Length: 108
Image (cartoon, rainbow, N blue to C red; front, side):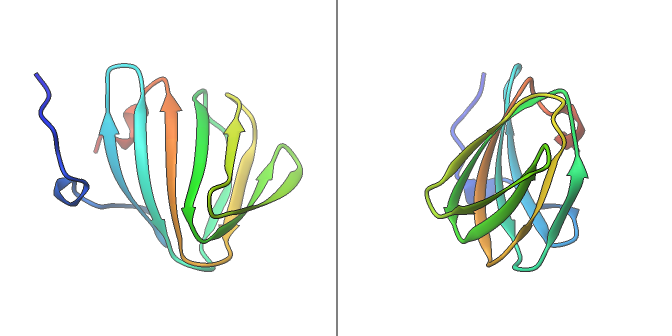
C-alpha cells in the first residue's frame, strides 16, 4: 500500500550534468520533478515511453524530431514514443515530466 510523500522526502538524483530529479513510480507510469540549471544540455535521445512535459518555472529550448520549440513557464509538450528529442535550459528550470510506461531506468 502506498502512502503520501512530500516532494521534499523524495531523494534527489543527478541523472546528467545540471539535471536533478525526484521520481514517483507507479506500476505503469513515472512522474519526474526536475530542477535543471541554466545552460545545462539534455543530449538528443529517444525512448519507448510517451512523455508529457510541463514547464513550471524557467525556459527550455526543446529540439523535438528536428523542430525547435521555446518552452516557457506553464507550457506543455507531448513527446511521442521513440521520437528523438533533447534541449537546453535557457534559465534555471523546474519541469515536471510524465512517462508511460514507467521509467525503470529511473528506479535507482
